[in-house]
Length: 266
Length: 266
Image (tube, rainbow over all chains, first blue to last red; front, top):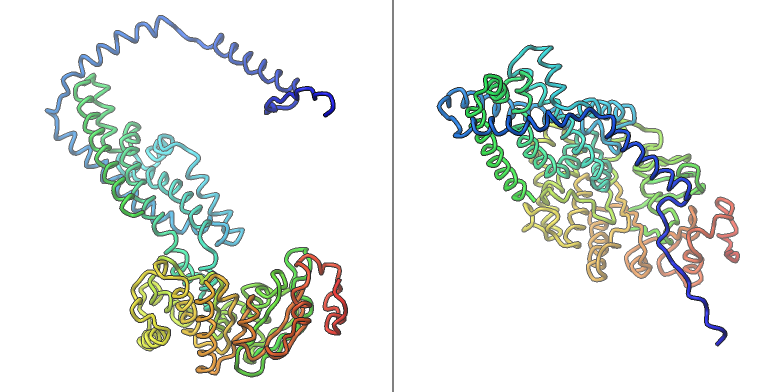
């Protein structure tokens, strides 16, 4: 044996190898955070005033007032109708769009169009889309249905396109070898493979649209959201609280049902 | 029945996978193609029904120059070329009967495909073939519940449903255990005799090639270097067919004739 070797040091290599860059980044981030906090107009007086106001709102909200149940039922009925119609139509449109937006099925120009539709449908939050549709077609459920359709198209279309891209190409190859054309290959080799995803996504989207239908109502696109907004405007906090409780109950129920259905599928 | 002349295939800008390949099959019977992985066996088979686009050369199947076709005439030509796959390529989520009827997709229209209303003649034929291969009790079972051997039987029946004039089989037994593999090869052999059907089989198992084939082709780096009867397949020939690995022939000239003369391999 020769002389005992010096113990060799080891440290986990840093994620950013260049030390100047590493510490420079730290300094920049902290400097920005300091500047951001220092220049934001945080008014402590208003925050302090907010607490008693919140207490007042909540005390006025209790007990919840269910006396105007007729208004509530019609609002929720409209919301649920909007959600169901928008889900059915949105999912129906999302299927051809998803086929167009699947790289393994669609030729490149069609693929570009399909992707573009999905990107546009996904780029705005439903609230913004609802504002635009309310301006375009006026207050009411129609604007809400259009909004939720676009929302469903973006979400289901994107995930379904990914499902199409993940299918087993061997099954498609076999149909082609039998002399099947594009549509017959879709019917026999593509749809069977994406069907479980398709059903799962549709159920999830119905659930999601039910929730979103309450939100789009706030900007005038029909449903329970409008009723809720009016209750707040007229300081009917007890009625608003009642609406919120029912909303929570409905969402819990729909989540339970859709979860069970989706588990049953897989 | 099949005549291939000067067939070249190159993927992208890579090496030639098929190098001026010539092949003629004039009589029914089972022709086995042996060769190491990467020799171009699968590419050759897929060029015949144009699942893969040849780079140059002509292929004439049953008097039709398939290399000149596109669109509908190509799909019609594919109907008379059955194909059996290594991975079976059954549509997992569909029943055995649906998978078998998929062999008729080149003949029925899209509405019939969508509603699964196939002509009575096709259904009778399907029942008869399923009974012939012993799957009459599995007709409404989902394809993914079957064992490997059963699945490949479905694959064989699907190919025969096309009423093909020639059958291509790409490593039909490579995903099966030895015993099942033997049974499937025997079945293909019997059906070839019963239907007077020329069958072109890619196969790794030299023993099976000797046992079941009327004619054996040895393929190496995109050309045929052996063409004869199974019993002529001596050790020296096998050495030449399987020598080296797929990457080693890259320095060879395309279709180098010295191979045929039995010159020493690189």
